Length: 465
Image 1: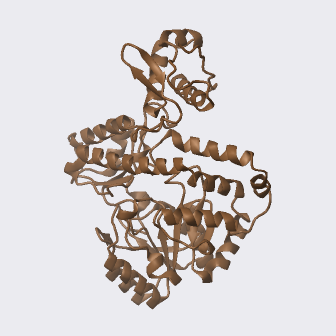
Image 2: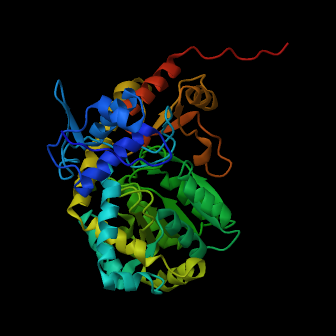
Image 3: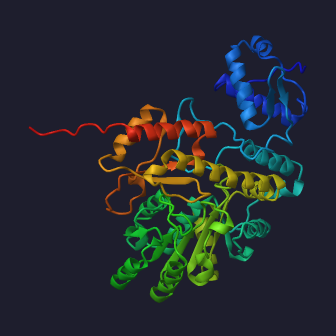
């Protein structure tokens, strides 16, 4: 038996601190594969906590994949190299106990996300050249070496780009903001799907732009409606998420992609193609930056693949815009921190990054299947390997009522208002971000609450006297 006592952080739930200490001890080699953890009562006495706290901590460590429980025998270390072998083991989120937050589009939690960063930072600490680059000023579009490594990663993911066409950004949102500030002036018009990513709406407001809503359906943005808008007064830029609209999951058809490219050339507007919400290559259509290379900017980020906190993205820009976009970076922040860019480059070059992405693709698919088992009768929409699910509510039920009722039950979703462009009326619908749950069990708990709330009788309307 291992005589081991964890070192606990001063803050946070005790069970989570014990589980995190187990993970650190395994990674550091303090606990070896096959070793048995202390009996729960012994560890509880040593730490001054309840046996239930230790039991919950061991269960959490098992859910993360660090240990395995054997009935009648105890709990044993699996080892760091085995901790992520099972394709469906996710780590706990940092949310408060009792709340399942499905309001933010986050990748499913997994211990490898932090582990990858730790390995990258440890490698940088031992690399004198990398450290010297990290403390020096760098070109505004990013180091050529970093752009080459990010271009190689994007190419492996099925998004071939040339290094010289990239501008390194601080995530996808930064890429959107850079584009708007470099290509538009206050008061100009841009167009987007009537329901679109709130980050685009926020960036447009900050840039004092007028955002025009273009209707969309299951095949994406309505090109005939866009053509009528262009006939009146062409927008300066059109923003699209062609592979999966956020929030509805709508996919732009190939015919509409070609039509959009033709309209961009005819009316000389720019296209901002957002590819941050990652999908497997087989589920993506022809990139717009390949159909209209000279008029399309393509935003990508590590956030939805590696981790949200790794704020490194890449903006593919036409040759004519490379200098203006570089100047926009310089005006905003001079450069993207090279230390973070180096860390992300090392992460994506690791074999663990490939394992993490393979796990994530399967995990998101399983979560989508799980959501449809619970909510299929309400015909939700979303991509088979996507993170978001859009749920149109039954007639008579208002989104605000559903959100309030679910909040009381410890489940948080997003209503329709943040996605509405301009003065478009909000549909009665909600978005569920399936990756926000710390585990499938937590997601099941949330989906059960959503279904039960949907099935509850609606409140009686107020009547005037």
